[in-house]
Image: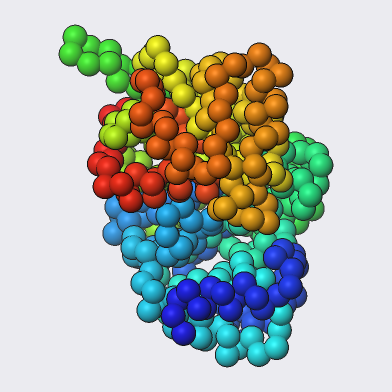
Length: 432
């Protein structure tokens, strides 16, 4: 079968799109010996920031010369982004081979799409004989498919209200789900600056070791000015390390600091030097996360799709050089806190292009009308509704716009990027 045929098949195995639990996937994991690995395993969970953390980890370890394995979700442009070995996306041929192995082992066991592809990733990592495996939890942690693997180190980047239908309606409940990736006798790094009590309680109940930001490791902003330049750095320090003049990038410093703390904990098994950390941070590329482009138009692209992420995005946008006219282009899924997310970015723009996502994701899609009603209730007159991201992008390129703010669902940012590529439009990152 082709890769597209495989995707169709895997999506039809289980009648439920989401069916949490580790029993089904555990049977296959035991059969193929995918729970334990000979190299260190880092599992990362969090409402926001976990992707930034795992990409920073990958970049640091690659710079140090280690063979890395990285599993993330969802993808932005291409499915193969989700599974990376030795700093490269896997090939279609590798993916098809892994799918065949998992399908033969599955027999008549029902599995969700995410469970199936997680097993495929773990199988490929097993075959690759890597030096370190980095796993990003897809949703929650306790019952997420990656939690079948015994990790050496866990990280929780942040706790905010999202996916409440599955994880609980309070930060305490969500924190319990995410912190449950910790293992007895192993550390859990918490990068959430205002952690719910459930983090410490869960780690203690599972006999883990909590390492908390602003208690066990710290960050501090640095500003260096001279006659020729003004540069912003940050420092990160802990019990046995102190790194200064670290490059300030578009990724949140707390998430980078959590990655640094993880690297320090595993230093005996995976030796690194300060240069690996500095260069690793500089070389971390994570599209769709405060991604700045200046062609075909000046724009910020960000997959902020909950209020917590949108608040951080607004803060970053407000630190950019001021422009006279910004147009926000937004499309969100209906199971998100759409209005609350949009509210965080009201100070950044007074013109809104609201897009339907029905064509991109029919099951969870929104036609944008709820966002439009909310914006009009806030007195915003320049508010336009589009049937698709492509229609909105076409209008945006012909508008009087000094800066575009393209945000919301992964589908929104991906569709905008696909539109620019399909039109043969040049893209180029701006200098921060």
